[in-house]
Image 1 (cartoon, one colour):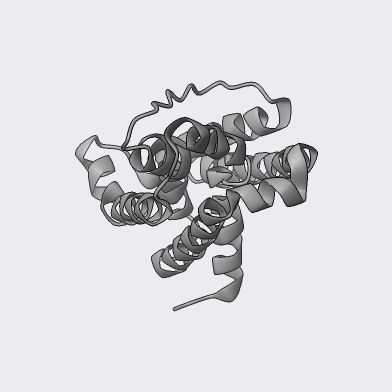
Image 2 (cartoon, one colour; image 1 turned 120 degrees about the vertical axis):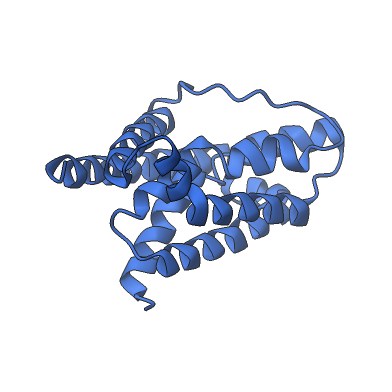
Length: 190
């Protein structure tokens, strides 16, 4: 059953992890290098990866003998590190953007939108939220991602680099708080 509170929580968590606003400088730089980025293609491929991992991620974990609680703890640690990246401005995870004609898939759809942090977060969220509410949160985020991809130049002019930096720090703090709560809730259940 759909729960508005869960959908809102999931949407905000995924929004923080995906950090599409923080990726605007990367997207703008990529557009300068290759010309055009296919927003529709990037959004659809990222969505397919996220939804597939949401529904088959558990089976993949079982294949390796890992329970969702343990994966949630691992995911909370990754979310913590991503939050630290956002706040400190240092990259612990290295992305290798490649300027190719397929720039909608690499690095935009994967790993910018549906990267390791996002996929880990999806499985971690299953420990606390209903799948349908997570799916709704994914779809809301994909709609927002699409809008941002379509309007990065406009957003850059309106918000400016300082505004994007401030948003990144705020969502970093929120993500750190969420990761600590997720870690605490799941370490108790082990």
